[in-house]
Image (cartoon, rainbow, N blue to C red; front, side, top):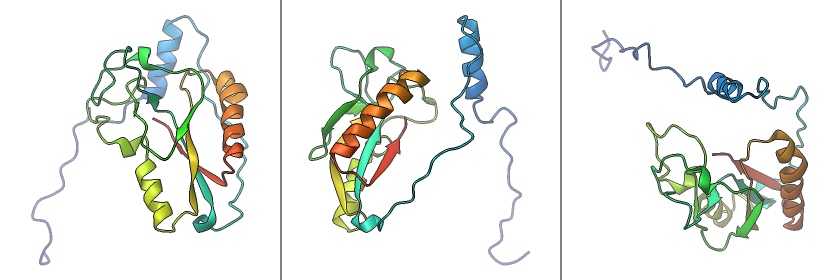
Length: 181
């Protein structure tokens, strides 16, 4: 044994400690509701456009699926249970000059092993502001945008994505950070 080497063998996680099979659970859930088998959005060809400038000169936008706080919609704080009443259904935009009050109680995530206590996990506005101040990005866009999570591929592609693109173009954005929750 070499100096500094561990004296015990690694301990394997228990057999039940595996990733959550969320895709299969989702398929089963929709089938139980009487819908046809759910088809995940999965494309053979995904367009990619390389950034045409150095990131240090680019105006960067932020798109999140976090929802604006709705006072009458029940518990939306960190650790709140799933709250469908807090969903939003239209793209929104707010200034990046101040930190908006957005929450993620409207989406399903592993509430047993995490909370929504760290705003930077779903709205990294402070980190992007720091990146702009440090010269790592050219500038932060004047607005951030919210993408609804209404689970309709058609609405997402034909309505929400088109509107998000229009707003990013209005803001003269060169690159976007997408933050799904």
